[in-house]
Image 1 (cartoon, rainbow, N blue to C red):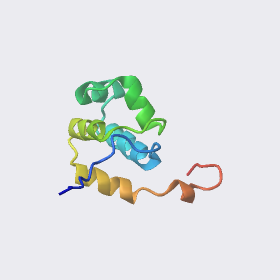
Image 2: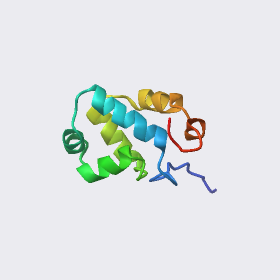
Image 3: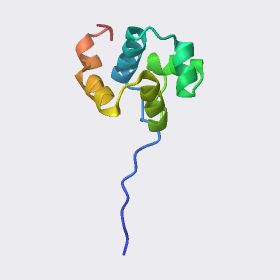
Image 4: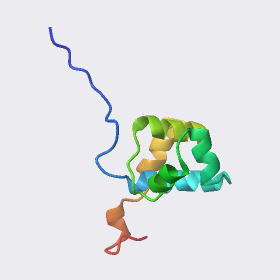
Length: 96
């Protein structure tokens, strides 16, 4: 008997601008530097910078590590990302 297993992808197909915006906002609201957050999340500052600029799509484990370092639950993070306006709503230039 075959059993299909649902697996979460290691990384998104492309960077998520809403996730980038939310992570950057949460970090700044808490007064945390990129260096400090990266250290506590166990990633490099360069990786965090690329994630916050929507230039990299982090693996789920990385998102969990960043959320833990920000003291934010994954549900809360997901809700904040879902509430973020779509880039399509930002206009033709891709800016808000």
